[in-house]
Length: 293
Image (cartoon, rainbow, N blue to C red; front, side, top):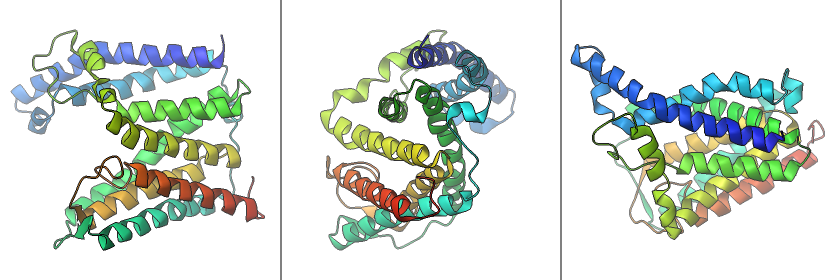
């Protein structure tokens, strides 16, 4: 079986298992709340539990997937130890965050955004935590494992396109809140059927999906060029922290789809900013004598 077929089988299994166990997670949480334990769980709807079920299924089925894919060690994923990991990490943060914040300054100058009068310090801690944990998890999974398995097929560019499309789809697919008002054994499958609703909007498809796909390509390219995850982790962290920090500092005055969406990572303008980061990253790797590129 080819790597693409193995990956497709793994992803299908993850979705089916997640849909099956999501109601159990939801009912377990409701039972705890009913007994006066962890009352904060009551505020989450079924879709939140479905997303957690996907993560659980992906983690549980990961080891069998790697065994079937013939992965026994890190080298099998086209990854090597990176003695300059700190340099690549910092460079990634700078290369992604600086163009993004420069774009933000221009948007403030054109009165698309206005500076907030109050900085919400309580949200800064959550932003820092997300900027640290999300890139580690997503880069390890998408660019580390999934891309590594696809690269074993020998088609580098096809592997980059495939994992970037998957990266965009996973972030873009989300069933509307309260899709399952009454939770049954089939609610997970109902969430899956409604998850494609956003693809009915061409403007949303252009402004959100295209940007996520390009970002995925940049992260995959960084991983392939360095044969390491640290540069892609830095880029990912810089985008999350830069976008989140700007949202804490400024508020949007107008929605200008498809040019600009809900944040600095959605829209045609962010698409151009991400392209600038890609050019800067490639230029830096090409002229850095210590680079692995």
